[in-house]
Length: 467
Ligand code: FCB
Image 1 (cartoon, rainbow, N blue to C red):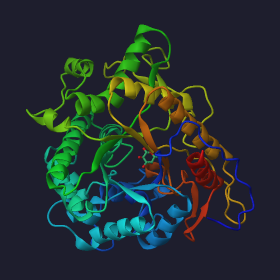
Image 2: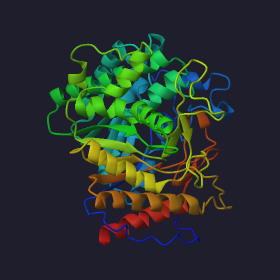
Image 3: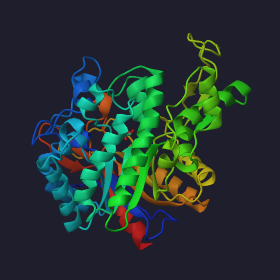
Image 4: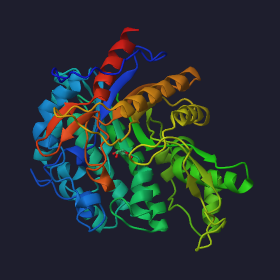
């Protein structure tokens, strides 16, 4: 921690209701922090390519250097340790470990994660591995990407390579981070890599991502030499009707179906939701399910990773009152709750966080949850020493941790919380312009300076443990 800091952190108090076993952590992902994009045999991912597409990423930013974590890993682990967290959630870069996405392992690439895991364990920090945080090897995209079934099998092969190396020391493996973002933002909205705009590709991607999860789970369980905790991380919000009309209620149902239930229903119930299947059938569309897929997808797992940033409402009319768009499809329009916003223009809705967690507990019972991401971007202004007095981020963390405690009090089985993010990093289409870190990064000098929120988080963890 920064011993020269003179600004007093906001008073940290214990978060009532979080037990001593509650797991505290910070999270990052490979492409957002590592840099070293062309070193030790790594090949391009879809994000390296997308970043080079004019206009795709703010300011033409890319992850070539990012936070240079690949070269600064031991210092970054020391930083994590200084926060007093139990665990660190990071992702493994597929094109670093298996260049091109098929074939043998790249020992130099895998060695980085081997060193990282050892460094974490030597510092008493539990490594939480995410196997896929959006960096699909470009060659697999060239062969069709996630809309193609073979990609799911390629993913399972890659997972086996990572698992064989790390399973002796890593207790928790999660397969995918936020498949909704991969499928919807990447293949339908076109605002994330690979930037396609095709609804059918999106549907196929959803199914093959889920299949990839299931196949990877099979491979890991078959190879394990000791028990592990397995899971998947989904980004979820709330989808309430913008008003109490049938048309808005139906829009909210559709949004919830495509945003949350098409993932959790197959994973937990072994079927796609009947209403979504019917909506799709009315458009002549369907998920490309092959016999047996849903059994693979719905195999039990131990933990659901929940990424929450905000909740929203939905209306079934556009701003001119039309109920159907130019293609004749029903309008599903997000309406942001009337609350203060973050720098992402995301509404600050801690009450919806409680609502989501209680709903997950009700609709998908018996599944322990860990918050694998929660946090906020704000326009941080460092003082001359680089210190950021980020009251707004601190308040965001405080109110959302209280929301987790509220959900637990209502029965939701939430066992841990990872702040997004350990440090400022490459925020995808927003480039480096949006800062989510609790640690400030000066990208010129690569100096890391814990923000007030980091000091608050450290003290809150310590006081909650003591309480
Ligand atoms: C999530 C991503 C994470 C980060 C946060 C702000 O959707 O998983 O990498 O970009 O949003």
